[in-house]
Image 1 (cartoon, rainbow, N blue to C red):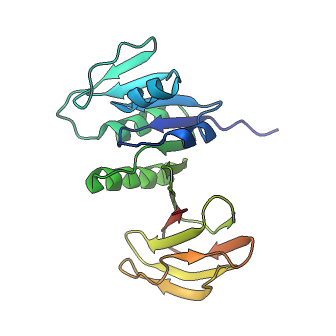
Image 2 (image 1 turned 90 degrees about the vertical axis):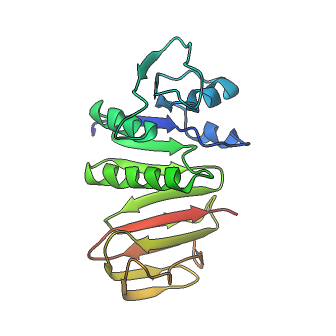
Length: 209
């Protein structure tokens, strides 16, 4: 039997009106709240295991759990600091909830955290009620389920020999440049979509709205 992968959920502070999707991710996971993310835990009645933040966007927590207080002036965002702490503690499967919001700079920073995870051998995804984002440097396949649409883009450099099968718009051995938008807003033709490529990194964005 293989070694069990330690799972961690990080709850970030982007404003959200519907937290019902959290229930699909928080069971049997170590829960870290990034700054005001702990207020979301209070709202859904879940106790975090760890809270990390500078608390410039919320009042300091008075919770019965481990708390790490950061300086306001620092190099990493609260959420990225949470990702690094999770990695240091051996979590190899990280889900960031509530990290997609109205602040594009914050959202992009959280996307870069996915790349940090990939570079350190950690499976990671960024999720809100309508989207899931991953970055991969290996072929991947996925089945039709919650998400009706998917898009992909080359991250930082071109993706070579990109092939897509089982989709509404298939592709064969295509070179996808970082500014190429050909692969936006695809859908399912078959139950399963297969994506392969020989070089580069893809950001995959799944959407249900």
